[in-house]
Image 1 (cartoon, rainbow, N blue to C red):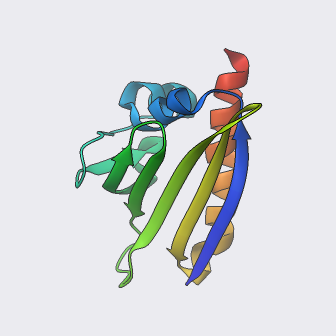
Image 2 (cartoon, rainbow, N blue to C red; image 1 turned 135 degrees about the horizontal axis):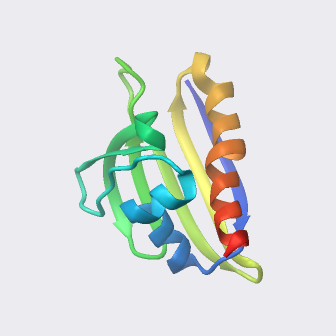
Image 3 (cartoon, rainbow, N blue to C red; image 1 turned 120 degrees about the vertical axis):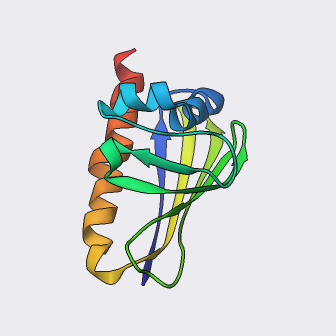
Length: 127
C-alpha cells in the first residue's frame, strides 16, 4: 500500500471549489460524466460514470472532504482527504490519498493529476 500527497492551485475561491466537488450536478458539468453525490455522511458516491466510487466520511463546508475509495476486496480503507485553503490565486487544494494498492498506484496518481484535477482547473478557467 502506498500514499500520495500533493498540493494544487485551483483558480476559484474555496467555497466554490467545495461545491464543485460535492454537488452532483456540478460534478457532471466538470467531469462530463454521470455522478451520484450527496453531502450526507455515510452515503455512497460515484463519479466519472462510476469509475470512481466509495463512501462519504466527513464534510466541512468550504474546507474539507473525506471519503473512502473502493478498490475491490481491500482489507484497509483507502482514504481520500481534500483540504481547501485560501490562496492568492484562488484555492490551494491539499490532496492526501492513503492505502492505494501498489498495483494501482501509478494509474491513480496519474488520474488525480491528468484527469480529476486537470478537469476541475479547466472547468474554472473556462468560466
